[in-house]
Length: 95
Image (cartoon, rainbow, N blue to C red):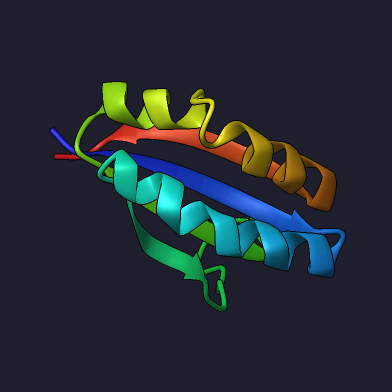
């Protein structure tokens, strides 16, 4: 069953975040991950949620998604993201 990381991002350091975005695809590929949504222009249709940026990553399954997120390959990029943006992130199973 596919699994998805859904991330709300508020970029605080655009230059650092741009560097981060360039590093991520190589680590994703190793874990079978891919971008489904990367940025866009979120529009609130219901409720009060008003995200600045949304990223959705798809992985083959929950175990692989978690392995990527906690991997040594992703660790340097993750640290850079955490310095360059405020994020909310969830992992959810697909159907």
